[in-house]
Length: 262
Length: 262
Image (tube, rainbow over all chains, first blue to last red; front, top):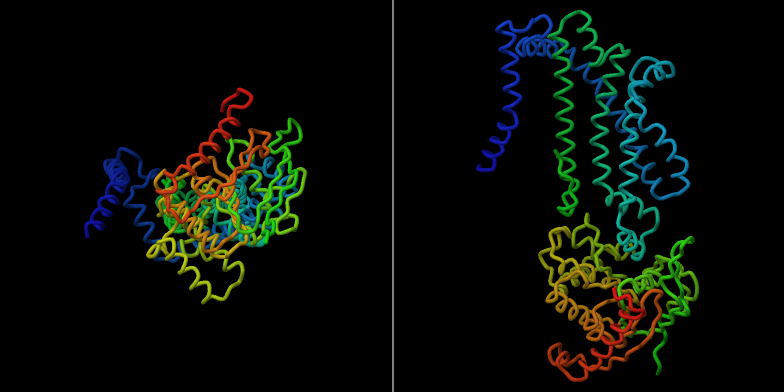
């Protein structure tokens, strides 16, 4: 009971600044301090949002955007983590992949989107490839560092108790570098939404990014903001979900190792 | 009957690096008989842990021969168990799973694993802590688990790398007696590396003193003490003091050798 009350207090404290901002925003529009044609009020946006939900327009577009972002992220996870771990283990893998990683690390991945349209056409494939490419590097780099930082006595102990090399890889080095991999995943998760929306904004038949551009071009800014809000809410929920998952997955971790999640 | 030589170290050298190579060990000779408890003491950085890691099969020697049970050491194996100062428990596994690990790798039948693990948990007095993670244990408890998980699969040789170095003085004494008890019921061959002269004399049949880097064994002391007397009587006895003093002086000479005191 007490805990529940405290949790609600904490939630209230966190939500208060956002509520205050929305109130000021609403007031500024209602008092005609700003032009409602260019900045719709929170109330108008929520009305538009309800309309988008009722019409089913939101769900179908959000579904496509999430398919691109989560699909691309999953692909990046499946490729990036083993590749990064392998780089830490094998000098050959490091000398092949290392220069590629360094060369593409600072490249803005959004710049490649037009090229992907050329190769894969307009649609989910392109969006997913763009997301995958952007998410690949943080996952790869963090997995690489994670495995490099595994204490050698852990590997030695496992070897001396008869663990075969392949098993060392997934039963010792993977859990030992899980904290680093999950940090990489959180960064990649943020990238995944940026890339999915960007790709849809550049060219798409549907998706939240497409919705935003369409309503923006029509001057229906309340609907445009409603679409933006939808993706903000989803991205926020996904991030919080990942933090909760991380806390559970790393519940065994020594306190001084745990990176303070914001 | 003369007991068989279990560990044989013949003119073993170890150098690290190629340019500006550091010689850690310069021609170490050591023989340990089956069932014997031998300690190596020496100044810090003398390469005593390196010798242990080579016997474990984690590092290759640069020269000389390392034989265990008459066979050259090539890689880690379940015939040799190792306990590290930093415990090296798998932090993502519970106490129970850490102790069961070696038996699982040996593919022992589940009922046997369960019974053996439970027996060792009782022996180390950690009943009720089976489902805890290492992070929830004190240093002494962690080291108990580390000893148990090595004893549980009954290696012929036990390698101890400053096993109680991270513990406070009182816990260290308790753990030494625990080790003695475990060892006396198993009679495995033990090679321990430590910087604690008291610990070496109290536990061992023989104490070898190592020189400063590049390390070699410079002096050996046979310890013929009646361990049935118990710690108090033993430690306060004349025979214990005289051998302890002799070893201590020998180590001190090594530390001060060459003028550059560490």
